[in-house]
Length: 369
Image (cartoon, rainbow, N blue to C red):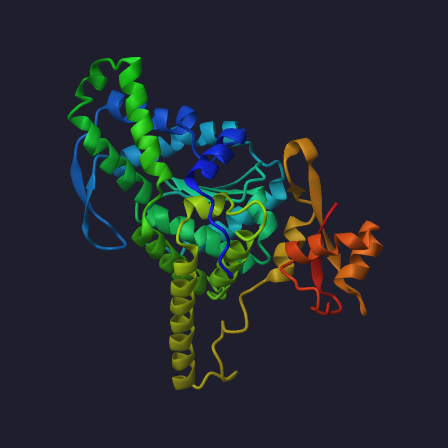
């Protein structure tokens, strides 16, 4: 299942070709952060990480973190676009807020927004601002998978990972760029923004990604979702790596997909086993974990994304949800709905199906129009 890896030169080439580049570009994010920090003044402090309970070096106080989020949010929305679907926006926010209620950092306000980008990605910036693209929503198959993605990003906010990353990057610059607060030159500011941007693009690191996954699994379970669905989503990402496009944006910014699959699956199974043991002790009337066969909500999710925009704006298409009938096959649906039986592979890939898979009556399929 291992997909081919894109070489560094290929990644850079893809970035240059894309007008959206990636999540956070120096022009609208890093520049803003550096400017906010140095022009407002900053001081080094240590803070207890609410996830690891260890002392983290922090240049950014929580107040500054929240301020950065408020300032950066409109720039992100301006750059990547706000997806204009109030119903879907409200749905994603509803799922996100449900997870927030069981997370370990509930003293701040969280904001969940869909960006009008075909790139498959989700990310968080300081201060509780979490974004998911319409491209990634089109890839998901259930509400529980959405909860897994949002839970992971909430985990980064809880751990103050972006604020910690910025603090570590700035610590290396304070000695050489101390004059910035008094009036930075263009060259100094460019150096600062480039250094910080490169740090962010390297990602949070293996352990912080694993911690965010673990928190996502826990938050999913506590909110009533099947935690195994996070692994289902990660497995689909690994398959995406085998397409001609190679690893998508989510894979680049959320590394170690195969290691993460093993860890999230193990944590989810342990969580379910412990819950089942509690049920057995309490003589649960159904004789099983209350979440083991529940908490996926696939039909609910597919109903909400019916009609979502798909692909680049220059060649915009939409996803419609088709309900299979008795006797339907992937090929017959392609011929009946799209008028082209050769497009069966497109339907199979989008719905994570194999050619030999039998369609069940009332099963819902995503189809690109």
